Length: 200
Picture 1 (spheres, helix red, strand yellow):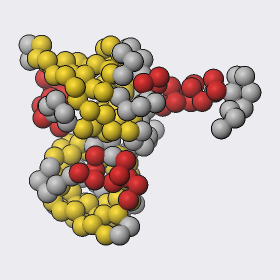
Picture 2: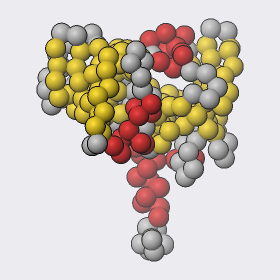
Picture 3: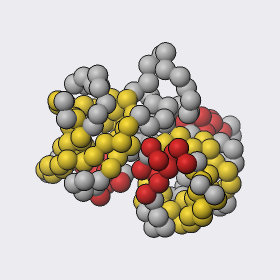
Picture 4: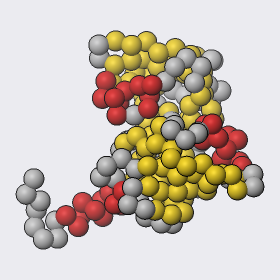
């Protein structure tokens, strides 16, 4: 479990691909990582399999490569990093699992002073989980939803977020990992059963 508050930016050092996925090597200054720890890499929960003073590596399955932006990473790309939360961690963002629901696309970027208003096109079927003034996790960053339409949602990115995460580099057409709000997922599932179990 994570909170969507990015601790550090990492840099992709190498991606070693195989028939069963890939091993991702990330340069990082995050200390205290142990083999077996969970870490969110641009919003995707991965497990640390090796570590040294320069960073860590994690194995990525074929499904994760296909369903997230990790499959498109190249050497030198920046990634948002967050260690798993503990019971004593401040919940400054919202509850995030690191299980990406889909890949969204930037459709509008508009500067508002030093901040930036950004709109994302929502993958089919996910729009019903996103509500105005609710939360969404974009590339591992907890954000407040300012506005929604049938197919998009909008957020306001403050200067600090633009500086310390990869979101400051996004342009129209960029793809991002999207995780919908955990509570919205369970409420929607509960409502499906109000008139009896789903038929499919």
